[in-house]
Length: 111
Length: 114
Picture 1 (spheres, rainbow over the protein chains, first blue to last red):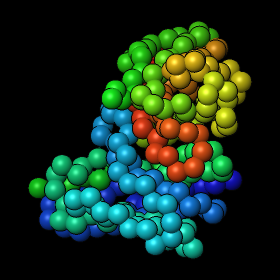
Picture 2 (cartoon, helix red, strand yellow):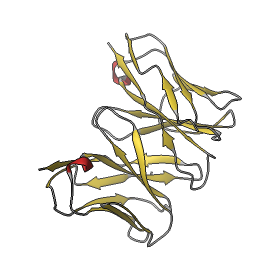
Picture 3 (cartoon, chains in turn green, blue):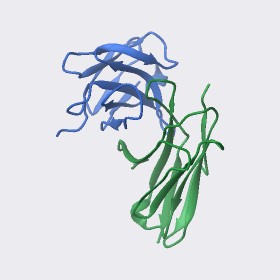
Picture 4 (cartoon, rainbow over the protein chains, first blue to last red):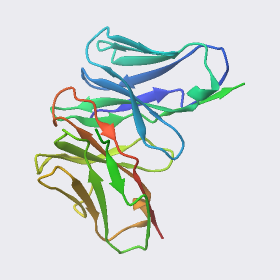
């Protein structure tokens, strides 16, 4: 059974600092997604990573995928308050696009 | 292009009742997936419909059932509601049920079971 773990579960950062969220998954998959969720809101797609070594960047966020290590990272550069949200990684399980989500990382950026 | 929409936004039911949640997929999408998100948890896959047929199911009991209509909109039905069914129910649409398509999520329906 595919399992997805994220760490840390909670991250309090100061504005301007850098940090990384880690996503580990238990079985082979070549499709990994990152989503953002604001409190009480739905999920916003951030990145889709489809191959080993894939790296994607959007603004202050950069995601990478290492399929051999079954690890994805979401790196935050020079955090700003607007990045405060819960971040989920999700791995596609099986032939269908069923998503298995991690536990989420609650990011709080303090001024 | 319209996004994924869901109705109702909020719903309060009592144990034992039945509920129907609705989802309209994004224009051009023929696949709808349903997820349950309990408070403080990640979404859990319930099932997926592709061109009106169930295309995969998660670990949910049979009292969770669904439909997809010819216009690719979808319903999630839950019978004999239990307190643990209280959650945010999200639907997501994509172009196909396979491969690398990104799933786009609707705003969700918050279900409270008393």
